[in-house]
Structure formats: structure tokens, C-alpha cells
Image (cartoon, rainbow, N blue to C red; front, side, top):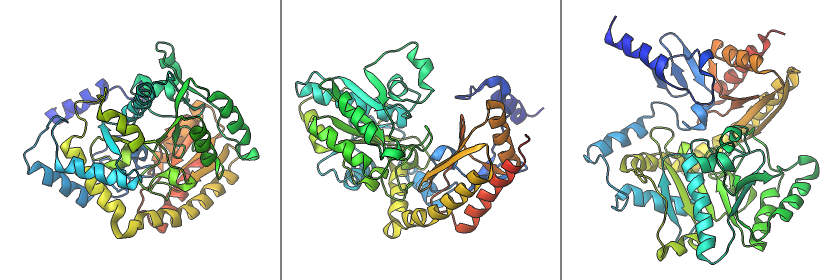
Length: 421
């Protein structure tokens, strides 16, 4: 047996896969990728959710790869964050500009969960340094803000919170009711208004719901929520980890509802998955308190020079030609919505299709074993869609053309038609 075969077998038996029972895994080994596709030794598979809504600019992107090579030529492996690098500071300037945060600041992390946890902590610190005793952070009952940190797990309303809550406790509570379209979210807002007392320092909302099931906000809902926060001097934190960088047809999803949060978190498409990086973008109101007070959070790899170089190249591509990629999302999402609803109407085991731009999912009414079968049938039909419990996601790369979009939705339709009763 060759060494490569030995390491392959060890890898398959020794890696713990998140969120899954290990005894039933049957993972395909991916050996290369190009554009919208990932490959095993024998199959070409359409990556129709950018992995986990990450690779927005496509696999094997030459422009992003060149940025990695450019950085390697500097010889810099790593420098602590108290040193400055041109790419980190350039990236920070661009992010505060894109967020419309004049004189704002950016703190960096490794991923979305640590960004959300640090954002909540900084909101609490801001209130404390302003002599307010508030310490609670609220979020929606159906929400997901990460699972790799205690804070992000406990602020999420997603079912993955349950196990962590057995062992940990924080004043970070997913208790805000999600909006109902039948009343334009008014009952939700009324209940939230009653929750926002002097004990609350901030609320955390997703720019557009993702992992929890693409739960859509009624028009004007976030604006009313923002006004509640302004009335009660509560910070509004917007999680754009999954919904940012054009995925909904706006650079930030919250811009679609014309709000201006105090803190924005981002990750995933920030580097299009080519390396790990997250950002916490603070407006000047919040960042000002840290002029004379230390920032009591951070990570070894905060603002890693390679990651910031890659992020800047990704921003170049998002902003290229007057954000033409965002125009493509807005145009093609109409077709995506049409095809998704056709599938939902065709199968009685599909409850609903929801999407906001290129952030969408089919919600199924099926038991777990049938949902596993659906995932396997999709791969059998050469398409990958991320599944989280009863939701199958449809979140293609931003530059997808009409032909591949139609072909991909047809592959999903074909896979569902093969599901045995």
C-alpha cells in the first residue's frame, strides 16, 4: 500500500465531522475544484451552496490565487496585531467605508462565531464604560450565529444551542419572537418592545436569515426594530456572516431594509473561503470608547496578513465594474425564486421555498432518514446542496449564469422525483 493510501485511510477514520453522527458517514473525497464545480476522482459535482455559503467567487479563482502568491513573496508568515500591515489597514478603511461608518474601526477574528461573540462582548463593554448596568444581549428564537464558541452558541436560537446550554450560562438570550408575515411582523415587534428594558445592552439580528431556515423579514420590519433600539439606547448588532458581500443583491443584506446598525459582523465570503478571516465593524459611537479603554478581546491571528491580502482581492472582485456581480444576483434570483417555488408546489413533502437573492432553502416535511436520502440523491445526481435538518439550501456562486442555474434546479427536481414513498 502506498503512503498516500495509508494517509487517506487514516484521515477518513480519524476526523470528527461537525453536526453529524459519525457512525453513518459516507463522505466523498474531493480532489480538485474549478469554478462552480467540485470533483471526486470520478464525478463532477455542482457546488450549489458555495460549500456553506462561503465560496461566493468560485473555486480556483485565479485573481484570488494570485493574491496568495503576492503575499508569499513578502516572506511574512505572521506578525502580531499590534504591528501594522498595509493590507490590514487598507481592508479596514474599505470595510468602514462600505458600511458607511465614518471614523469607525474594525477588529478581526478567524470566523463568524468568534466575530459574533466578540461583537456582543464589545456591546456590553460599551454600555459598561458608559456607566450603564445593562448586560443582556437578545436575539431571535430562530437564528444561528455560530457554534464554535460558547457565546455564539448561546445567542443562537437554532436547535444546535441546546447541548451547549446544558453546561454554560450567559445573559445572551434567543428569546425575541421571529416576525410573522401575516401581520407584517407587528406582534413580534410588540413583544420585543416589552423585552427591551434597561437590562438589555444590545440585540443581535442577521442581515438576512440563513442557517435557521432563510426566515424572511417583512418589508420595513428591521427599520421598526432599529427605531426601538434608538428609543431605548440599545445597540443594534447585525450579523452579515452569511448574508454579506452581495449574497442578497445588496452589499450588506441589512441595506435592503435601509437600516444602520451600530456593529456589523462578517466572515465567509469576506475571503471567499480561500483562508479564514472575520471582521467586527464598529461605528464611531462604539469605537470611540476604546480610545481610552483597552479592547479586552482578540485572537492570535487577528488581522492575519495573508487573510487580509486575500480579502482585499475579493473586495476588488465584488466591487469590480460597479458591483456587476450584485446585478447578476438581483437578475438571476428572480429565476431562482420561480424555479424553487415550482419545486415546492410539485412535491407534497416540500413545505415551502424561501429566498432572498441567492440565500434560499427548500423546507421539507420529512423524517430524518428521508432527509438523509434526499442528500444522497442530490449527490447521485451530481449536485451538492448543504442540508441543515429539514432545510436544503440553494445558494449558488454570485456569477452563475442562467443556463447553469436552470440545470442545477433541474438536478434538484430530478433527485426529488427519485425519492421513494
